Length: 538
Image (cartoon, rainbow, N blue to C red):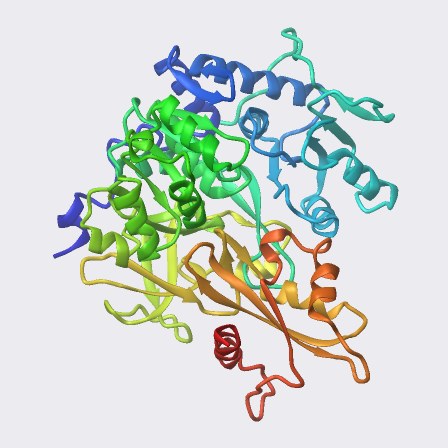
């Protein structure tokens, strides 16, 4: 039995967004769903008509700065409606937003802003959880952002520094709207993915996001009456493409939360009658263990994404939260997130053991890692993907871009997996050393470099271990410089301001030497993983 006979054709003839850019698609949504509720945030609500007005106002404001099509603007914002307005307001007029992780440390921020050639940045003002403006000003004073021309704050600042633009008030209604982008193949936005290399790479995604979002919604029978609880970070591809765009592609409402707090999330699900939720296993644990939780309070939930395939977490979703229609998927930044997806009504066994069928018009093959030959079902190899959804390039990295594609234009994911006889993908692990923590790629090479920068460290090796709540955790093995002693707690404190929280190793072990492969001297990380498991058991 083939994938086609299981769930219809592999193309999507009824998708209304094929061949349409963000601007064209957003115009259609604003007309079709005009008065329906599109977004809820705290005590504010916006219709689809309001949504388009907000996005257009941002486009006009950006145009008033003289920003040109193709120029880059960094968005360094927490979960708030303005993230959406500025993201899509830039995209629809061809100004390319660079979405930044708001938990990054200064060195990481400086690299991504500068490497992306960003000429402007949008940040919160006073009252945010960190001093965004202070961080940007520190980097500018050190001449680490030489290309940055505009710093825009979205909230009032007690003492506004010279040259910083205050856009906390409403935009003028007289500003002209720049020309809209109509080509879906044009650059949309840039998302940095650590992958498994030492420095993050900026994946340039095109403007076909709503096309894929529509097909994504097909997998769980989405309607305009669904209400999406969105509490995962908006800078992540799970939230922006798979969340915002999926919801809006069919007229569903987004219920956006600034951060995860279990008591409030339970209250919001109950009050807003949320029917869809995107959750990490650790969120599920905190919800069902909270004293205020009762199954009837989340009874409106019918389906959603569970990040990972941990069967214990799945059981909690189905049994404790009574949300039987959770579904799993496979994707990454470079594939515009999900490229395979289970259906919410697939048998539980399929949703627990596979990552589903490819989305329409997206090809997924398993190929031999060395030869590139396509493999038969159940044979393990590299997951390779081809389709309209694949990134345009790694920004300003032609060598890395070329290495990421096969001669017949399949994207090499670097992931190990196999296909079932029915055409479903089973993801196994990264082929190289990277791992995922809370849904985000962690480059072990990047973490190792930062650890090795410590003056008392001679060498470092980092591995990922499976964890039922967060996907994977990092474990660092460290060799001290001759004659030096390194205290793991002190080293952990040294790393904290230098790495994003999701990159910090959960455990640090001191060793005298690494297990090496004879002849090549390569660190045998599979042995380090075994050592980590043994030490943690002890």
